[in-house]
Length: 234
Image (cartoon, rainbow, N blue to C red; front, side):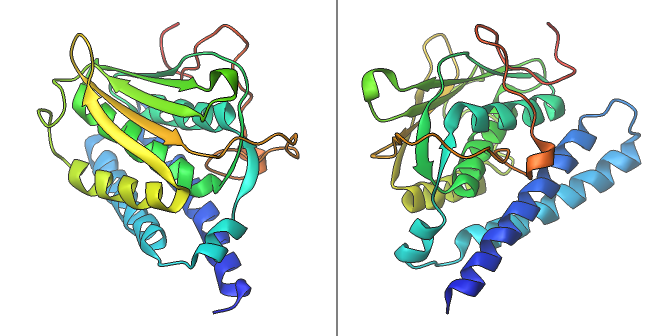
């Protein structure tokens, strides 16, 4: 295959991620009746299957590297948090911190983090808490942590967790990342993603949002505040 089909796959990935984000936002609305919620759940599952097909496409390494770009990692995490918090029966939050520039495939990382957050939300359940943290002090390799206060690794509701973690492993290989799961002190689970050799020095061009198109972007939270979805309690 030539670069053309690879570029097309990348563009389709952007559009599928946008659809997924929109469906997640609609499912978080309070006014939906049971029938509408069931139909939206079906739509979400079909979108996830399409995204999984794109994820599983066996791209050669040079094509994967061609999709890399410089981006601000905390902005991408903020995008995922806002959308998932709006659709969560509990709360999803991002701890504040400095900007971290990385060079990698935006859509692959977005899918990886979204799958980890979705797994954590299912484990935490109604009223549960999911927290994201980004650690990259002193120029070290960036580490993304997704923690929940559920019953712990392997003890929560299975749902689509097995499929989600399989997708995470596939995406981690594509990104050259390391993903580990461990018990959280005090109860729950912590998923840790280490992005080896992905720090970037150049200032990125005006960003597209983590999981959608430029006109969908939302501003990052003010310094010192935790990012939450629009309907979360203050």
